[in-house]
Length: 414
Image 1 (cartoon, rainbow, N blue to C red):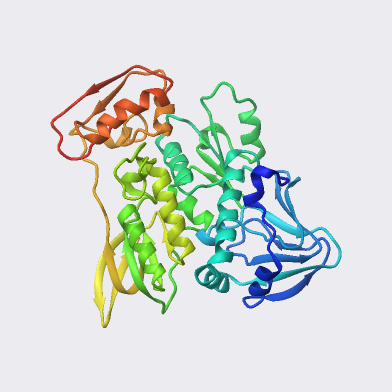
Image 2: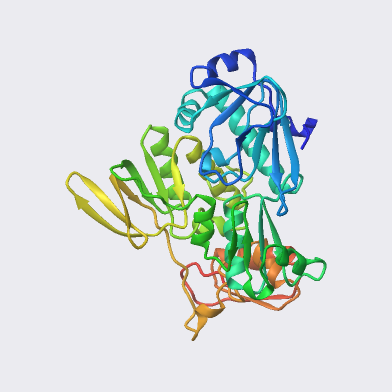
């Protein structure tokens, strides 16, 4: 991933003034030639700035072959969005020159830097976003692979989660005749088609995992911290919950945002939003919620999903939010932004077909599954009309017909 004019934002060189400022947040250390600064799968890693020498960012294939991604020289820095989102590292970095020295800034101090020094924070944040987009575009490294069928509910759930997490991943469809050697790839990790969907990450091969198991492997699921009391817990990570997370974190509050399913809520599945303040030309729901989540995380908020809140109790002078089966988090304030649930059809055994023929969104992911097939859009509201109007083109102009019902709640089934 060599820098090009188009990639300047992803690979900036910090000025002498910026480097002087950064020295207040970290310590200088020498890195021997060939030594890894971090490796794939680490739960966390420091923000590292190269002062002398050079450090290469690489990924390792299944057979441990090293693939170069980028080479950083003095004035450049390591890392990408995982430093803000809390994901485990998906790449590795090692010194590739003698006399390499770096400025190492621990995670906690890095968050202070991002919140207190906007000039440097803007450069770093822009680079992190650009690097993730390069990885997602295929120009870099597919560090996560999801292998499954477009007709499998579990496969679609995993792929949808990966998209909402902005993961640099590759979706491999078992039903795509254009992809060769899928069985060879599966055999290389010791599985067969019967074990799919399979998620291959830098640290594990997950056989038919739930979204929660996938999130846990990535390091984005909730991990309780004994004796920690958050200032604010926001239940729900749609636009309202993310906005609350932004405002809480920007005021210096220790803020946790959780969602039972994934970041974005109903808005994240909308193909187009025209009435959100500040975007006169409109934007997609995924763009809106991705930007909101990144803004909250940049300001210091922690976002965990899937992470279901089951209860709220009072204990002394603070609240206790029950999470999942056994965990809990203490906080001084709670904002409930749980939004709505889709109204479902009164059809026997409906749940068995959800995400496997019955969908509650009309993004390109669902359209790809439905390409070339007759589809019925059920609902009479704005979302149903939007789905009927926008999804046929995304699905390569497959035949669609819209059956408007008397539903008054948002109901988008295709």
